[in-house]
Image 1 (cartoon, one colour):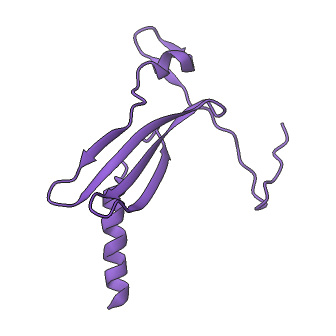
Image 2: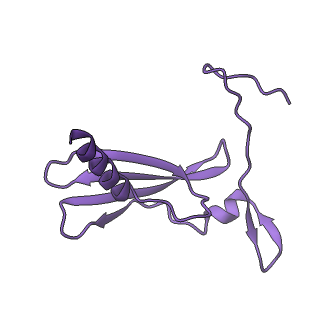
Length: 113
Protein backbone atom coordinates (compact mmCIF):
# COMPACT_ATOMS: atom_id res chain seq x y z
CA UNK A 1 0.00 0.00 0.00
CA UNK A 2 1.52 3.31 -1.07
CA UNK A 3 1.20 6.22 1.31
CA UNK A 4 0.89 9.31 -0.84
CA UNK A 5 1.69 12.66 0.79
CA UNK A 6 -1.17 15.05 1.45
CA UNK A 7 -1.15 18.76 0.52
CA UNK A 8 1.16 19.46 3.49
CA UNK A 9 3.73 16.88 2.40
CA UNK A 10 3.00 14.48 5.24
CA UNK A 11 1.95 10.88 5.00
CA UNK A 12 -0.90 9.65 7.16
CA UNK A 13 -0.63 6.10 8.39
CA UNK A 14 -4.07 4.50 8.56
CA UNK A 15 -5.06 3.13 11.93
CA UNK A 16 -7.70 0.74 13.10
CA UNK A 17 -9.85 0.92 16.22
CA UNK A 18 -11.31 -2.29 17.59
CA UNK A 19 -13.49 -3.18 20.56
CA UNK A 20 -13.01 -6.58 22.15
CA UNK A 21 -15.71 -8.45 24.03
CA UNK A 22 -13.72 -9.97 26.90
CA UNK A 23 -16.38 -12.53 27.76
CA UNK A 24 -16.64 -13.94 24.26
CA UNK A 25 -12.98 -13.20 23.43
CA UNK A 26 -13.71 -11.75 20.03
CA UNK A 27 -13.55 -8.45 18.20
CA UNK A 28 -16.95 -6.82 17.88
CA UNK A 29 -18.12 -5.44 14.56
CA UNK A 30 -18.75 -1.70 14.42
CA UNK A 31 -22.51 -2.37 14.32
CA UNK A 32 -22.21 -4.34 17.58
CA UNK A 33 -20.02 -1.91 19.53
CA UNK A 34 -21.90 1.20 18.39
CA UNK A 35 -25.03 -0.20 20.10
CA UNK A 36 -23.20 0.09 23.44
CA UNK A 37 -22.78 3.89 23.22
CA UNK A 38 -25.15 6.83 23.29
CA UNK A 39 -25.03 9.24 20.37
CA UNK A 40 -27.39 11.74 21.99
CA UNK A 41 -26.24 15.28 22.67
CA UNK A 42 -25.51 15.83 26.36
CA UNK A 43 -25.28 19.14 28.20
CA UNK A 44 -23.40 19.68 31.45
CA UNK A 45 -23.76 22.84 33.48
CA UNK A 46 -20.59 24.03 35.19
CA UNK A 47 -21.55 25.18 38.68
CA UNK A 48 -20.80 28.76 39.74
CA UNK A 49 -20.23 29.81 36.11
CA UNK A 50 -22.26 30.82 33.06
CA UNK A 51 -20.79 27.96 31.06
CA UNK A 52 -22.09 24.66 29.87
CA UNK A 53 -20.39 21.87 27.95
CA UNK A 54 -22.28 20.40 25.01
CA UNK A 55 -20.93 16.93 24.20
CA UNK A 56 -21.87 14.60 21.37
CA UNK A 57 -20.43 11.28 20.27
CA UNK A 58 -20.26 11.02 16.49
CA UNK A 59 -19.82 7.94 14.35
CA UNK A 60 -17.24 8.14 11.58
CA UNK A 61 -18.22 5.27 9.30
CA UNK A 62 -15.42 5.86 6.76
CA UNK A 63 -12.66 5.55 9.39
CA UNK A 64 -14.64 3.00 11.42
CA UNK A 65 -14.18 4.93 14.65
CA UNK A 66 -15.97 7.50 16.76
CA UNK A 67 -15.14 11.01 17.86
CA UNK A 68 -16.31 13.13 20.75
CA UNK A 69 -17.19 16.74 20.00
CA UNK A 70 -17.26 19.14 22.95
CA UNK A 71 -18.30 22.77 22.82
CA UNK A 72 -17.90 25.27 25.64
CA UNK A 73 -20.88 27.62 25.55
CA UNK A 74 -21.40 30.81 27.52
CA UNK A 75 -25.10 30.66 28.39
CA UNK A 76 -25.50 34.44 28.76
CA UNK A 77 -23.95 35.45 25.45
CA UNK A 78 -24.41 32.11 23.62
CA UNK A 79 -20.77 32.42 22.48
CA UNK A 80 -18.98 29.18 21.71
CA UNK A 81 -15.43 29.50 23.02
CA UNK A 82 -13.77 26.23 22.16
CA UNK A 83 -14.75 23.30 20.05
CA UNK A 84 -12.78 20.15 20.77
CA UNK A 85 -13.11 17.02 18.69
CA UNK A 86 -11.11 14.01 19.78
CA UNK A 87 -11.02 10.31 19.08
CA UNK A 88 -12.81 8.35 21.73
CA UNK A 89 -10.02 5.94 22.60
CA UNK A 90 -7.75 7.43 25.22
CA UNK A 91 -5.68 5.57 27.72
CA UNK A 92 -5.32 8.58 30.02
CA UNK A 93 -8.07 10.90 31.16
CA UNK A 94 -8.11 13.85 28.80
CA UNK A 95 -8.81 17.44 29.78
CA UNK A 96 -12.32 18.70 29.29
CA UNK A 97 -13.01 21.60 27.01
CA UNK A 98 -13.58 23.75 30.13
CA UNK A 99 -10.21 22.78 31.64
CA UNK A 100 -8.54 23.74 28.35
CA UNK A 101 -10.41 27.05 28.35
CA UNK A 102 -9.17 27.83 31.88
CA UNK A 103 -5.60 26.98 30.85
CA UNK A 104 -5.85 29.24 27.80
CA UNK A 105 -7.22 32.11 29.90
CA UNK A 106 -4.40 31.65 32.44
CA UNK A 107 -1.80 31.69 29.66
CA UNK A 108 -3.32 34.87 28.19
CA UNK A 109 -3.24 36.48 31.64
CA UNK A 110 0.44 35.57 32.09
CA UNK A 111 1.35 36.92 28.64
CA UNK A 112 -0.27 40.30 29.44
CA UNK A 113 1.99 40.76 32.47
